[in-house]
Length: 283
Image 1 (cartoon, one colour):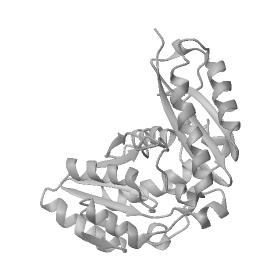
Image 2 (tube, helix red, strand yellow; image 1 turned 120 degrees about the vertical axis):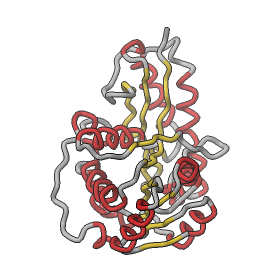
Image 3 (cartoon, one colour; image 1 turned 30 degrees about the horizontal axis):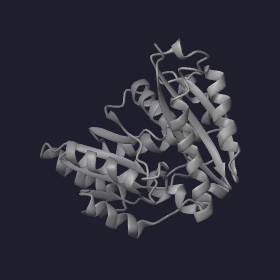
């Protein structure tokens, strides 16, 4: 595995690979890698001649300075994991490599960015768009891989490449969970052992909620999920939205869309955890 820190160096390597007709896949990450990331890497390795993974904690997508400062940074461990997963190239740029000048671009991300995370994290998705467009410009991948745990982000990235005519195929990959159901997240390493046990209530409640849609309304399921999770010590639901999987707009009836997703954000202490669950249309 080759490791690059400078934009000009990785671009030179990519130009060489492209001249040989190689297909390039990209897995954008903020580092602190876990098995969820590695599942993306393995799929990228399988579907492309070259797999590139970047690890860059992007400052423009954090609207909470403390969250940015506390975000785990584990470059040495990440390098070992990437090599073991078959990654071809690791890109560990500094902030000045991605943003040689202050990025003032404002992207039109449409109504997908106006719900759930949008109003609660002002500027977050614009920051995601900024860093991804830089990475896509630097690496020019044929495909880019994103996890479905960040369901809203995946929808917005698809909209971004469509609206701005970016020639990359966006590939969504299923949520990876621990054996006990907890969705893998870099933020999990900030949980104490006790907090981690409490956090299990999130996925357990979401799984159980799927069984309720034949007998309860959307509003009843929503209220039940929130109440169940808030009943667990140390957990506080920030929001739970049951929405059309394509538009991300809230639904009021199970028959409102063919594909419905429930997206949740929960504070476990000061650690912000996200998860989601798919609901099949009630017949």
